Length: 169
Image 1: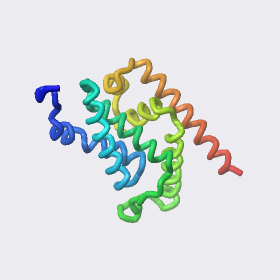
Image 2: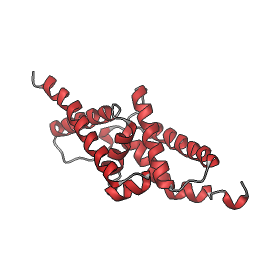
Image 3: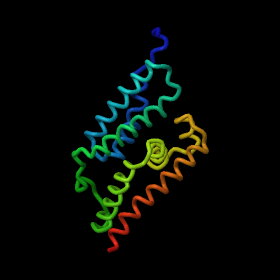
Image 4: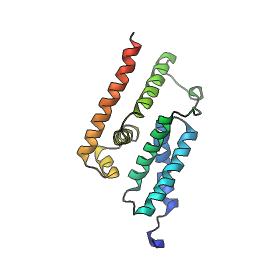
């Protein structure tokens, strides 16, 4: 590999760091864990680049951030959470408690999705990318994105329905 084939890492990091961190943070809700996952994603992307050229840095980095964040979530390591009292809210405490509980349940349920479904779900709902943008980033067909998103929603609904049944008793 000659110097002309080496990517401009400073530019890649500058362009993608915020998104990689945001994806990890939205899954983990921990600044420290999101920073660690961001570093892991960039290090892994660097290693993968040596195996061959990367066609889509955004897709690769978002996918790696999602997968590494889900791995960390699955291990359920204790993490330092941001304090909710640090932000100003006009929402009633009861409503805020319900929203926080649902957020935690969704985050936990994401850990049980297959990697492809979790990645598509995160890219669509957390990063608000279109089906075509996800398709291009992951190098899969738009129909595959739609199918993965549908299956992810169905599995998440099933996971969350279990919680709802337990709460109604």
